[in-house]
Image 1 (tube, helix red, strand yellow):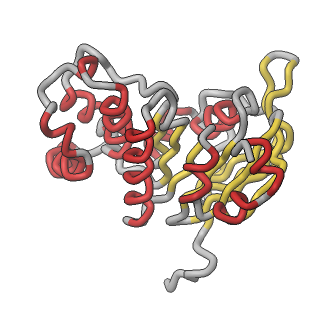
Image 2 (cartoon, one colour; image 1 turned 30 degrees about the vertical axis):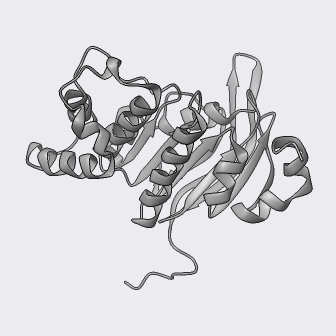
Image 3 (cartoon, one colour; image 1 turned 135 degrees about the vertical axis):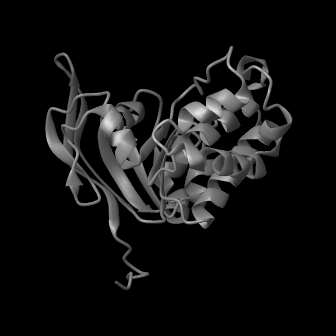
Length: 243
């Protein structure tokens, strides 16, 4: 079947999504589309609902209305572990690597859903993408710098060969040089055809490389469009770029 280059198939479709923490409504009718091979960025201030939305997609935050489709399947009520097996892998905020375990063992954990015969080859690919991890592969993950731990968290998710990669605030707490390196890798993955949903406070870095961008404020989507166009939007410039 020939793929329409201008309109690739939907990988993730979120419609009218609502979610609550007790009586407090965190998400208000969120609509988002992510198509195959796209890098889609969601930007917003701290507490706007970005992480809640990612948690809802990965299945650890219950939804109270609306729905989530992954490919042809409605996954709104699917268990989190089944979503991972279906091909949704998340790089969590704050990296969350297993400190006492070696870098190699952290990577093996990311491949727990994959056949054992594929693991060695996948690990070599990660070492090509992140050469510093090859150098430190036998060291405990807790001895890595913050930037190196971010690389490891991304590589661990990629070991699951995701059909959809969820990135939660990958630049958080990193020095500017490391932020540039992380976004270089994100761009490289997109160029290789990976479908990525990136949630990020650093609006400039995220929107400048995004095919499509969404802005979330107090749990609702307020703007959407091609990433570079959103960068020129006056509302975005004054709220997120200090212009």
